[in-house]
Amino acid sequence: METRRIGSQGLIAGAIGLGCMGMTHGYGTGDEAESIATIHRALDSGVTLLDTAEMYGPLTNEELVGKAIRGRRDKVVLATKFGLVLASGAMQVDGSPSNARRAVEGSLRRLGVDAIDLYYLHRKDPQVPIEETVGAMKELVQAGKVRFLGLSEVGAETIRRANVVHPISAVQSEYSLWERGIEASILPAMRELGVGLVPFSPLGRGYLTGALRSSSSFGVGDFRRHLPRFNDEHMAANQKLVDAVRTVAARHGTAHGATTLAQVALAWVLAAAPDAVPIPGTKRRTYLDENLGSLSVHLTAEDMADLNRLASMVAGERYLPAMATLAER
Image (tube, rainbow, N blue to C red):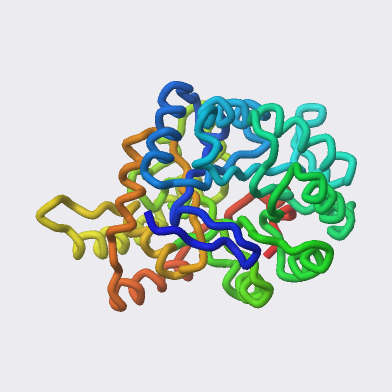
């Protein structure tokens, strides 16, 4: 697999990474054996960037990833996140220096490693200046517990302020055919500062694959039930996006098989942001193999023009208001 630089600080990873959240969190029941087999298949295929977080599970996702990479640490660019915690049954943000120091110890233990390659602040804490949070993260780098620093779902001004304290290697944000909000100001600021992009949900949380038509598709524990864009009205309205992706996929069918909608959606991200390493999430080898097939899809100028129109046609917000306030745009 080709590699890409994530920012200007020396972090390099395979062109496509693997989001591990859904293996234990957010998308219904997991299967540990299949999830570990998926991680192993990914590493054997040249995927190096594995993404997890303290909040996923919580805690159990890091434990699973730690189990999967045992004996394979040298093949992994390991990313995890802190700053979202469960307190009294509710999710809260804690970007305090004391929480950064506490959280990293737990992550290192659960992952079974001496150092984390890329350590993100999961969400900016509105009660803590970003300089204080990143200052504590810088201390973790100096202590050898973390190699590179990242932020997740933050705005341009936050990135600029953070980067003064310590170079930020990556920002993780949602970026896909139906979510391009970072293009206006965030992505230009990142490129100016040499900060890499790690797009999560590059398949629109599964919607752009064409497999979802109504909320009845979601099992118990699937958090998409609580996202406005995934109510039945908006899902029906957004089928026009899926139809457009399907039209492009049909142009790329070969004697070796059809090009899937997921492959087109990922190929668009890879082409639109050649300095990005997307992390499509899956817990099954079948979908991993399909996603990696996007590396062989080469979109034409006509394809890109057709796909670039889709973001302006999307119905429904990404998040409910309470969560939206934690995602800067």
